[in-house]
Image 1 (cartoon, rainbow, N blue to C red):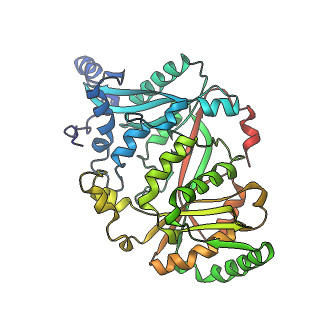
Image 2: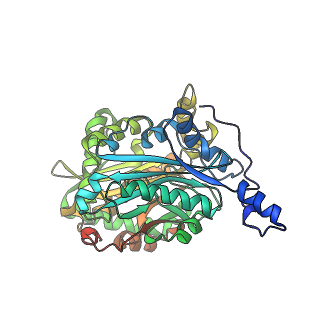
Image 3: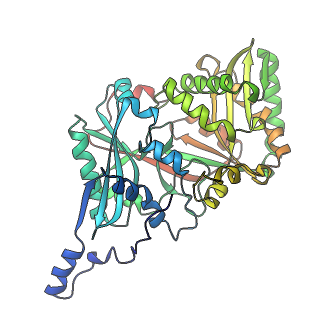
Length: 415
């Protein structure tokens, strides 16, 4: 999609300097006027959507979103998440030029599940200007207030099942596939407004050179689990893709039932996710664990497609999709997105067996690096397991809260 000409943001923070004269003061007050508008027209939706291309024009680590997917998650194109959610988009303008944006979201499924009155902030972008950020947050709070909302959480784009958190550590290299990225000053914009930490999420990194010392231990533990519980381990069967992906997402929903903030995906969301992932899945990077023919655990990895997404600038059509999937053997990184085990089997050691089965296939593929992301800081078991394996935390993300302290039943879903 073509987008508006890049704006010059180089002078946007000059209004913060002390003016030299009264004339300069009046001039700067006029020039620094920032307004926030609701996004209603087609033109404004386009400007809202294209803002990141301007903000990150000179940032080599920024990866553009897949445009079609981003439009759906924004609800500019229909997405089943919004069957039980509402969204209102706001854009900040300086001298008529977009300089910030935010989406205010009411996730009714979340509020029903946790008996909360919580709103969510997503898709936040802004220049380094506290006034602009503050006015965006004000607009979101005002609209959410009309819905009876008195608590905010974010950034979440648009739920925990998609993109989550503000990057607060690890700005030296690009994010991995389906992970967020932002400017370092975003943390300050949130904190100076009054947001406080809710949860941190970590991305753990590992290299093939680290495998030698842990593979033997993992294989031994895996063999014990397999023999003790007559566990069967296999790859995903792409010939039965619909069944397999629905099985994975069913286990995903059930296994995370006690995870902080989690809301299961609806059947419509499951179908949408299945359709979107079909062409990107590599069977060698998946594992299904079965007991007596029943799937009880899954592990799911996706190649880090971000270098290709950057190459095609997020455009799948007309030829971007072909470029995205060509010569996938040339991609040497995998993001291990999810290791899920049904609650009644989580004490069996199935997770170790899932990893042990996948490692030889990953090595045969030629993969050199892996990222395990994201992992909640409150998920102590996963944290300890990854640290013991030698994986290193390379990026941290933060989810912020604003409003009354969280004293709801949400606490009982903490691991």
